[in-house]
Amino acid sequence: MMGWDYGWGWGWMIFGGLMMIVFWGGLIALIVLAVRGLMGGGSSREASYRRPPESSALEILKIRYAKGEITKEEYEQMRRDLLE
Image (cartoon, rainbow, N blue to C red; front, side):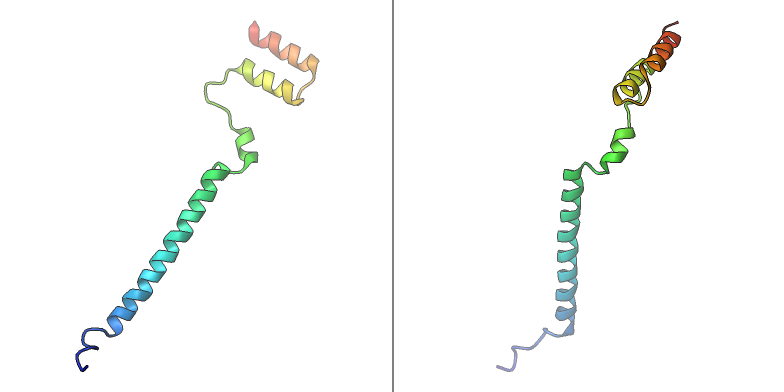
């Protein structure tokens, strides 16, 4: 019975505490990454202002008209200007 405690001291207790911190930190990081992945990685407000870099001026004009940002007269005038 005298040899049971040999080699099991503070070192193993500190190691166990560190492993617990690593485990919970990893679990929390996985949850955060999963939530960000499901939500798209950003807010929907930011995504609405993004557009593909290859969008032409006419496509942007059509989108602005569809959103109601410009009137029909403004749309027609800008469209004529772009197509000249």
